[in-house]
Length: 376
Image 1 (cartoon, rainbow, N blue to C red):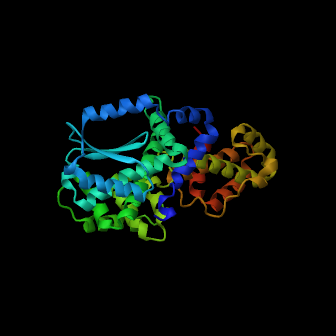
Image 2: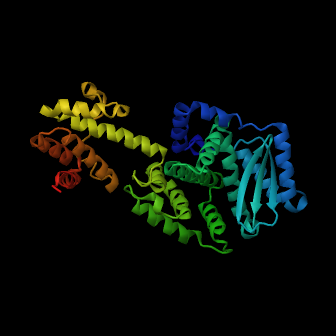
Image 3: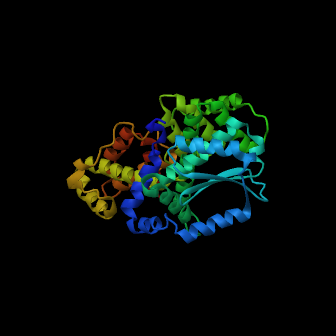
């Protein structure tokens, strides 16, 4: 397979770098559990035997053969063991790596719904999970386990939940792309995904691809990707594989634009940097109010906006904020209003108003300033 199809998704790389640099002790703690002991492996495999029907023997030889061929294409030099979960109506498949074996567990009526090509598509998708989680000494298994474990905490921040959602969806989209690369049959991959999601025995993958392409066409500019159903997003991303804007469309569909109501950890970092740039923008035009602005900035040392070193902070370009979401424009307008009101001299407000207009938040600045200075 071409290396670019096996490349770790950008979202995973960015999130891993963030945790390794900001939470090294926590990362190490989770990494230590990435390699289970022989006793833990034995107990986990025994649990599978107790709760599943193992798909071996002549009856299931064809399916087992497909699984090994797919594993070989992914470079997974492991024994693949297949199971059907007992007493489960949930239609799904999942993969578990234990020592030198990779276990794929089917649940519900999934196998009965799928054609041979669709079975291969599902196996390729599940084994792509295993391949991703084996990369870099299981670093991306550590990442996945760490984020979702944090999300399970009762006190977890909303940003952790949003991070878990995006990580999971970026992972699914990556595995869909690997499945497509292995099969070379988009219709089979799409029909398998639709059958898993709907339970229908007969589906029209071309019709659903048309639906997906409508989404792609409407997502050429940033929009609220978090409003779309997951299956739509995954198949729209699959449809985008044939476009020049593939990576951009995938990020837009999954992440959407930065919005204060839907922030993951990486978006929080981006908005922190944007806040720093907006304050630096105001500091550059402060003029006679520079001393008051400097005092204001000293009250937010964590943003490191030193008026003496503004040349180290990227300036805002004209209209940069005009296409941002309303919540982000409101934030940026409020920051410039705060700077404008940091001194008693209201005549200097005009300078900050002009700067707000230049960067694309003039209306927000005016509304917030009027509200802030209105007499009771």
